[in-house]
Amino acid sequence: MSTSEIDASVQTELNRLRESIDNIDAAVVHMLAERFKATQQVGRLKADHRLPPADPARETRQIARLRQLAQSANLDPAFAEKLLNFIIAEVIRHHERIADETENGTGSEPGTGTSAGV
Image (cartoon, rainbow, N blue to C red; front, top):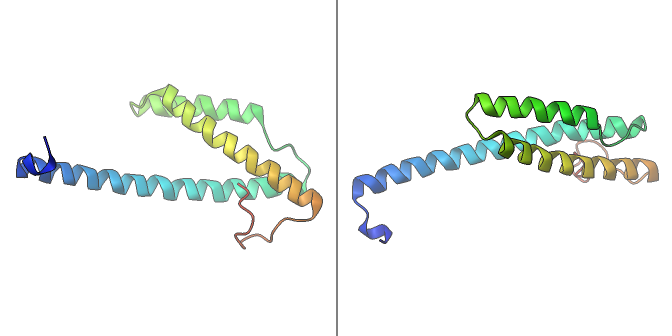
């Protein structure tokens, strides 16, 4: 069945739902951007004080917390954990880069956008 064969009321409802999904996707992207701005500040603080990029104990607590939140929101906790693990890996990678830049004196000034550290 092609799009042209769908009943008009069904197409209208489909479009409404897809618009809602698009809005949610945009909100997710903006929330991730805000999260990464905060983790960038954490990375700079860690680098300035020569703290390790990763904090396994916090990561474990965050995963447990997110799994509970997911369960209470009727979202698959395993999916939420996979998502958080992906985000954590990206944050650690950026923290490592910030640490290297700080150590080598090649980091950017905060707010310039030239260092993507999170």
